[in-house]
Length: 286
Image (cartoon, rainbow, N blue to C red; front, side):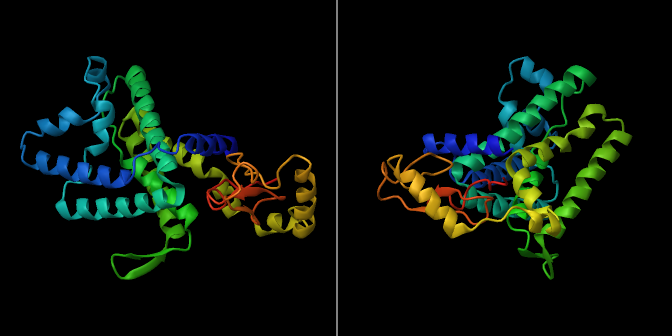
């Protein structure tokens, strides 16, 4: 997982213009517009024309590979607005924390995994529909809770509760969805929630591991004399023509003299990062 994230960070550095700014706003507005247009169509043909359908895609209706993320899953206007606001809050926060590039890759990866699984289910079970962006959006909640576990929100507008406890409820919902759908005879589509979980683990698995690591193991982890290690690194790097080098993007203080470099105290060992990645990297564990 760490290797995957380093490749994502390196790609985002090499392609700084990649990414859709305010991606979650686009998805929320698009979903609201689709719901409004669908509400005007009593036959629901409009929504079915945008939903994912593997058989229809194979017949040339390729827009369904993208438009399925805008098909709302909530019928009531109040519940829809609440969900859209919540998803926008979570998505926009993740975008500010990760950057537009990484967040765009996260969402696109979730879409890609969902579509691949949808085609697999079609070829195995013959089911060509049933996909939605609901589990992609719910997986963002896991990511938010991993990054900000102590953040409090008001449940039902008056009960303060930490995000990490809501994440446990979310995990229970994923498990319930799998069991209930399998009992209802949905076949492979019953395990669609696992796709969202896989996407979450690709991006946040390392952070989750350190968050749940027992305190005893954390205390037994190797300790370092940080100041001594910094002096050692400084001495070694002087012989290489630079003093600081970012572990993520590879930029050095020689090539970029105006760039600020810092060492991360949360990583195992001594690792240097530039100002763009000191708060945006996967922590080293060994």
